Length: 117
Image 1 (cartoon, one colour):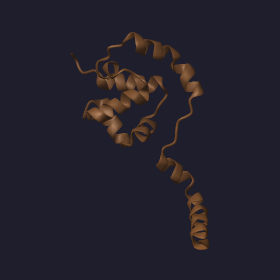
Image 2 (cartoon, rainbow, N blue to C red):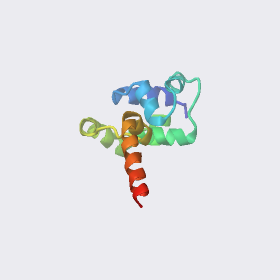
Image 3 (tube, helix red, strand yellow):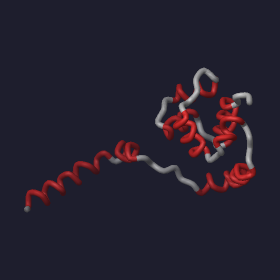
Image 4 (cartoon, rainbow, N blue to C red):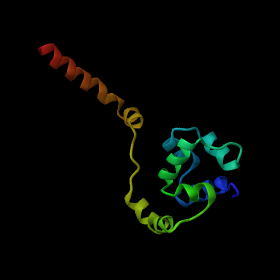
């Protein structure tokens, strides 16, 4: 079986309107890694492939070999509806980077409670 991963990655990423930067951020890899995968210079490890398939909501066989199953065809039909209703979830680091200022009052409250005892 021919390795069509790089073409599939580009095709699926573009179908889902994701930039290399956005995809890299969700996988916790660099944008350059995504670029190298898409150019066929390198390949992700198996753990990253599984995460990538889950993130893109495609079957691993479709991502790596281009073999579309009936289940993934159904997912592709409903993808537009799902993406319209889906807001990207924020991981812990993203939350902290956007809400770092909340840590100071929380630590103050905890210190005040512990100091009162």
